[in-house]
Image (spheres, rainbow, N blue to C red):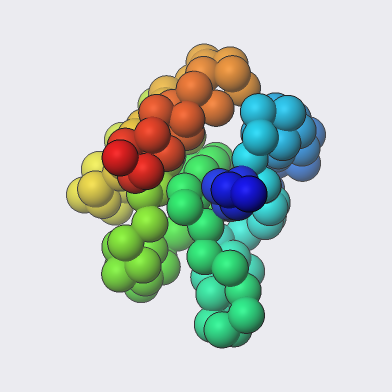
Length: 124
C-alpha cells in the first residue's frame, strides 16, 4: 500500500489551518498543522519525526528570520508561501526560492490543487 504524502501546514490562523488540513485529508494526504515555523523546525530535530513532502507556510502573523528561511532551504522540501501584498513584498520573502506562491485572495481548493501538482512532480 502506498503511503499518503505528508504535508505540513504552518499558520497561526486556526480556522484556515483546520480547513486546509481537512481538505488535504479528504484528498488523501496526511496533514499536520503547526502555529509557528519555529515549532515545526524544532520537531525536525527529532529523528523519529517524519519529514513532510511539502510545507505550506502562511506568512501572515509569522515572524520569520533569515536563519529559519535558511533552515527551510537546507531541508530541500518544497515550500508554498501564502500571503497578501504586504507579506509577499517583504525583502526577506522576495529573496527566498518558493516552490509556489499564492497571493490573497485564494480558495483552500486552490492551495490543495498546487500541492497536488507539486506532489506529482516529486513522484515523477
